[in-house]
Image (cartoon, rainbow, N blue to C red; front, side):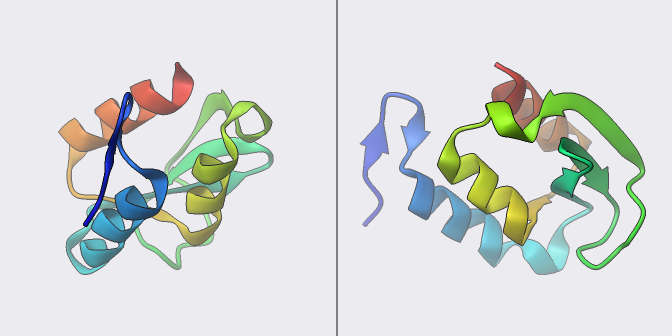
Length: 87
């Protein structure tokens, strides 16, 4: 069972939830040049956009999730995740 924290679901469980949805993801968040980038596929080499969110400023768990690629189901979830990572 996944425990809740002040910020939501614990990090390991959060990645497990995203990982299960990788097949249906419209976007993936990964690192590119030290910044959070948005890709249209898990194996794409070129991002659609690179954000101003520096990977070095993220928590360790978020950096680890970016290394694997965070699947994002749609544009609405993409905006929410980018807001969370940027805050």
